[in-house]
Amino acid sequence: VFHGRILARRLVGQETRYEVEVKAPYRRRFPLVSREYLWVPNTCGCPPLREGSEYLLMARRHVNHEHTLNRILLQDDGYARPWTPREARLVREAARHC
Image (cartoon, rainbow, N blue to C red; front, top):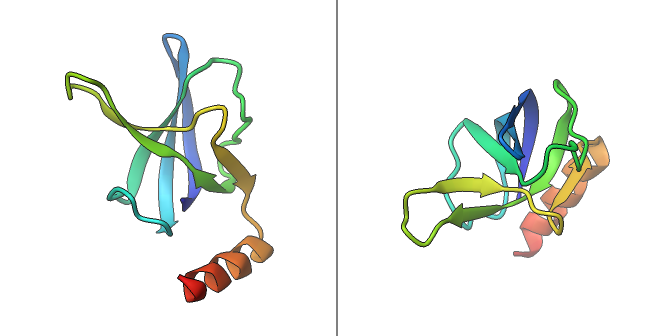
């Protein structure tokens, strides 16, 4: 789970690749750097992430069986919600309870 701003969107084959500025990581199951690529396994733009907008994103690290592919994947069951001051408050509250 992290707060990120969409910098760019590009179609690559049958997938959509977003370049994301990581504003703040929250649940750290894997390390994140300041800029990451977020992959969506479709080209329809679902969920619709707009360049320049900020989101609360719940994605997972995907590593293939051969360990030749290591990327952040936002699947259909992932979570992408527009970032609001309310989101910031909820994240701070959740962090206090962990």
